[in-house]
Amino acid sequence: MLILPEEVLGIWIGEDEPSKFWLRVLNDMKNRGLEDVLIY
Image 1: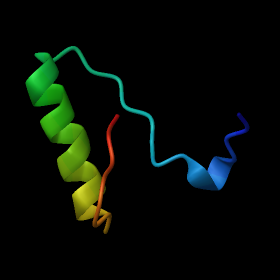
Image 2: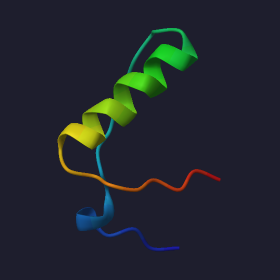
Image 3: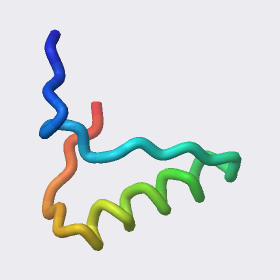
Image 4: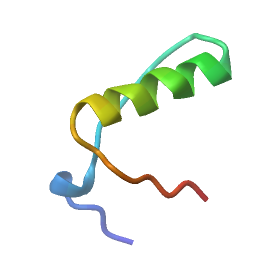
């Protein structure tokens, strides 16, 4: 699988509790205009 730079939404590093970390990540993406997320 090849991932191109324009396909990378961001890189986050955190030491928060996992649920707080993902809440921060998803809110950041939403604030930058992301409308839909598929997590599998």
